[in-house]
Image (cartoon, rainbow, N blue to C red; front, side, top):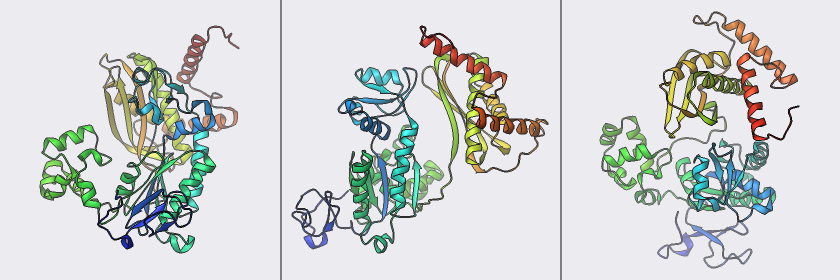
Length: 446
């Protein structure tokens, strides 16, 4: 992110006013509003790939709707057995992070206010933001509920303003009308745009230009590249590479020899190369569901019940989106927070609960060695549009089961999710009611 450089002549430096969203070459104050809140960059008129990231999105919505939360550490998540979905910046000052176990977060920040997530509110705000982005360009790729890439190439002729001005106005309108802040990164490709959006948070606007790309990256640590986790970063450092600058100087063949196919990817990212387009039709990559148990579980029957419930939930989401998957993934987390992930490719893709459960159960049985688990999850990947149900040689009753499951789905849609259930599903409902009764002993059953 380039700041104003005294060595660059004023005529070659441009300024974006953060108050009125106008670009100009004046190096003192804004000629339009008289303010001095400016972002300086020589390429700010020419860049068109942006990444927009909502700042602590869930927590920001909750603070917007409950003014009493302002200035206080807020954590969005479940009970003490759950994990942190997200938290506000005040809580982050204490070391709280997303996906952290709740008990650990509360140990770091005992005064934190825990708020259970209300996803309907978050989805509504996300749709409002998306509508504003769509008004700027048809090339919007939303990658999660709170972040998206935009390609604003050619939009200056349509809107009469360069992309940086359009983005600045969008940022201000989201804060004024929706009541939350977003951070924006602007560059010449997706990798650098996302990197820029993380440089100036919250409510930030950062730019990485073409001319500065390699210099900007050279001093960054290897894990600056999103997608490099702690394990891979340790592997890279083990080969003698501490910074992206060292990776820039390395021979491509050497990187491939050390890291396989990822060696070429490392070379490209270290040099700021990213040929991925902003694709508004980008397909969803996975469908999944997971749950954290109230108490650690090692019992097969209890784990099977939880797994069946998650398979029903995942299958419902797959059918709702018209997708089916080729790969089943089982996720387990032990009582000491170690993760186990197992995958298997199906002979034919599915979106149904029964084949999903049968496959995930096989994976789970191999992990039952007396270990107590605190979390289980199941998912479908390698997705494609759903086709007709196909007979399975392993389970000849597949077609019959599929018809029954789809009939049950219709009944649930009409009469409620608990209108039709299997014996295993009924046990899950009974267990849930028992937990509610235990949590509220004074409340009489209806």
